[in-house]
View (cartoon, rainbow, N blue to C red):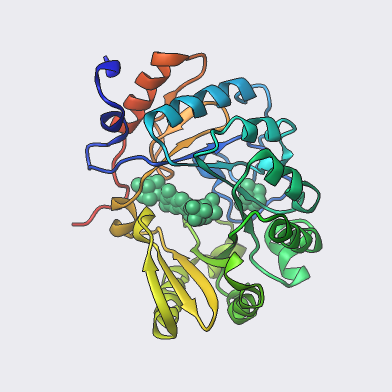
Length: 319
Ligand SMILES: Nc1nc2c(ncn2[C@@H]2O[C@H](COP(=O)(O)OP(=O)(O)OP(=O)(O)O)[C@@H](O)[C@H]2O)c(=O)[nH]1
Ligand code: SF4
Ligand code: SF4
């Protein structure tokens, strides 16, 4: 019985990676259709499964958050799909104990009108997906004409104090890799409250032919960018999570996320995912080892968490 184990044992996997961060997908619905969407490992590309029937209720999510808090989890991130589409999102945020750092990853299309309410509900900070400042490129990547709404959302998040706000820029060769300097300038102008997160494209989807040029060569592109940041940086810090490096480049804070074929990233992975339909997902890139928490309560939830943690292993492994 897992109840005999102490909380620290329950959260530590067989590779000595202790879970401190939980990512909960509160919906699989999204109003954008990004060409590279990995949907937090939930399945079909493109956020087409706007399926509310199997979605966890706010009560189920809140109970799960309570158990994770009791076990000693330090941070909770809400994701989707697009989390701001969930009507009871503010109630879910209010159920997160105040000692836990709460954040949310959003596409930003509804952020301008919700930023203050999110802050008032207790949310600490937001990450906003923005790959381009060019309207045509934005439409090409996301399928929708919402760039202005996202830019307004970033301003609103900064004004509401949902900081640091992180800008998630997935680098796409030939599509937005000419905009890195513009993004650095954008971030620099807003000080350390805004962090640029440069993300390597995860080559895990079935790409269409017209995506090929953007996919091939991306790993090298981000690796080269990181070398440039390192060369010009006046301060480098390494995060515990994934051992990601953060560079201060001429006043702009930049974090580099290079998950693919990177054993160091996986060796320092301390997060567990929860899908919108109530599966604990031990690894973003693996399927078939999920553990359901649907209909479970109390100690049953702890047992399910222990089983999911036991199923964890690094996806990319050092030889
Ligand atoms: N392989 C892998 N990639 C991840 C993982 N977590 C995040 N990523 C990548 O990082 C991107 C940005 O994730 P976010 O949801 O903004 O959150 P984060 O940057 O990981 O978390 P914070 O820095 O704490 O806000 C994702 O879209 C993924 O590409 C992970 O556990 N495994
Ligand atoms: S905004 Fe996020 S969830 Fe929505 S399609 Fe784009 S990558 Fe997927
Ligand atoms: S083990 Fe690696 S691929 Fe899997 S979730 Fe963790 S960092 Fe991502």
